[in-house]
Amino acid sequence: MLQQKSLTNGPVLTLREHEILEFIAQGLSTKEVAQHIDIAPRTVDRHVENVRLKLRAKNRTHMVACAVMEGLLQVKVDREEHSSPSAFPQMDMSEHDD
Image 1 (cartoon, rainbow, N blue to C red):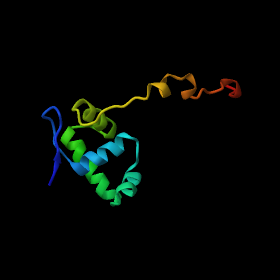
Image 2: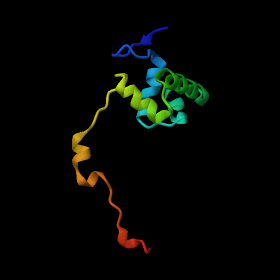
Image 3: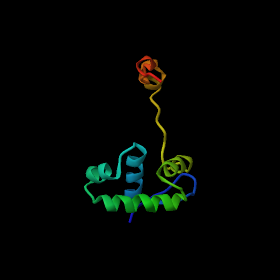
């Protein structure tokens, strides 16, 4: 089986594990990942658990953070989108009576 090597001699993920990790990092749910790659949600859960254990992560969020630190994922930031004040909706507090 082909395997994806990390840049830092850390854990080695299979190509499928790496593919699923990327989807999880994008915020997709188990069900959404399963639909994207046409496998059962339980199989996605199994791959996620395998990646989590390989990275010694406590949960999915920690798993993604660990993957970034290990060089398995790269963070791409669209500076234009995040620098605009309108990119973050603001709540009108005048509508709330406390």
